[in-house]
Length: 180
Image 1: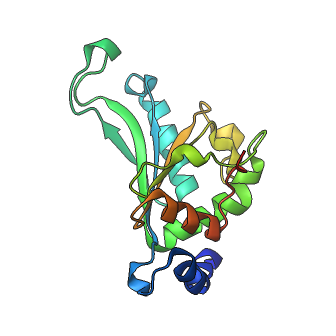
Image 2 (image 1 turned 180 degrees about the vertical axis):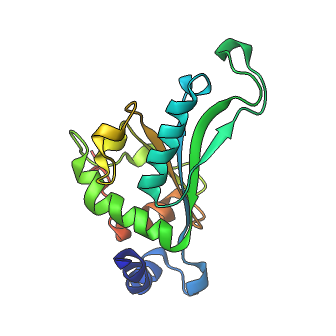
């Protein structure tokens, strides 16, 4: 466990040379990982929302928080204070543990997986991607799932731009799609 953290420590000289950064404090590193699920019908069904929160907590290894709507939106039939989603923020050891599990166990279990899209960078060095179902994680028991749902995973780095972030994530072993 925690091979990813030691891998990062070992690749610092390579990363420094490739990015042309001499000061090791300026090298990009992982800051946090945010896993979130939006649920449209969750506001009406409390059991479904709690099931989603339990599933995400199981996947992340940390208790998930049910998020509430900040204001009413009539078009979507959302009222202020309604449950609209679930999220969990991972830092430190939990973050590395989750990413290691995703890279080595969960990603290969994705149906028709050809790699993560390279278009998920936001211009500030952060990477976002979505998963279509939670069943790819080994902790999730199919019988305990009330409804199959997807999730968004945001990886926040200290990189100044997308090129630095891509280099960092590739060196850590993220399975990106091949360039076409």
